[in-house]
Amino acid sequence: MHKVDPMEIMLSDIFDKVFYNREPEISDCEYCEGDGKIQVEVYRSHNCNRDVGVIDVKMVKCPDCGGSGQMEYVINE
Image (cartoon, rainbow, N blue to C red; front, side, top):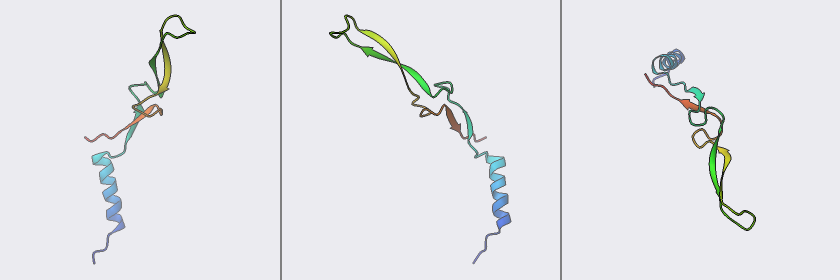
C-alpha cells in the first residue's frame, strides 16, 4: 500500500495557494456599499387615517451579502 508523505501534502497545499489563489478575497459589498442594509420604497395606500397615499422608505437587509456588508470572491488567475 502507498504511504502519503506529509511533506508532499504540505508542498501541495503551498503550491495551490501560490498558483491557484484559492483563498477567498473579502471586500465590501458593491450593492449596499458595505452597510449591510439598503433602502426600499414602501407604498402606503390611502386609508381612513390618511387622505392620500404616500411612498415611504424602509431599511432592509441587503439581499446580495445577507446583511454582513462583505462579499467573498475567489479569484483564479
